[in-house]
Amino acid sequence: LTGGMSSTEEADGIDFVLASAAASLCSRGAGADLQESSFGAQKRRAEEILRASGLSHAIVRANKLDDLIVEEGLPLQLEEVTSFDLEDTSDKQGRKMHPRDFAKALLGAWGTNTTDGVTSRTLEVWTTSS
Image (cartoon, rainbow, N blue to C red; front, side, top):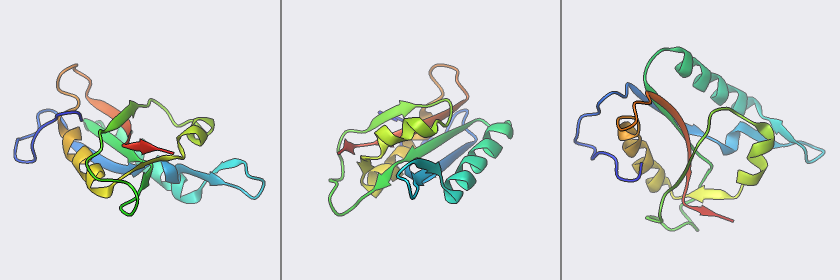
């Protein structure tokens, strides 16, 4: 994701890139407790199906997309995650990025697994935190 391949280069080893949304995996309930949202459950289920498919893949999760306040072209931050932890999401709610930067991250994901032999990854990406 930090250099990756251009959109014209052929991907080597990645079968599928899934655009997902980390911020939609949970929401604050009436008591202000974090709860998995129904949309979040659907997103998580889609990720599970892809993981079980046997395809090499990259799941790229953005938190909040914002094209009004967040500048385009800020340095990309990423975190590799191995599971969904509801409690872990509360610290990440302020992460944001411009939609065009998310599109660039998706294109860059095609090249993320070729250097270390890992065939599948789940990455959370953002450019700014509040």
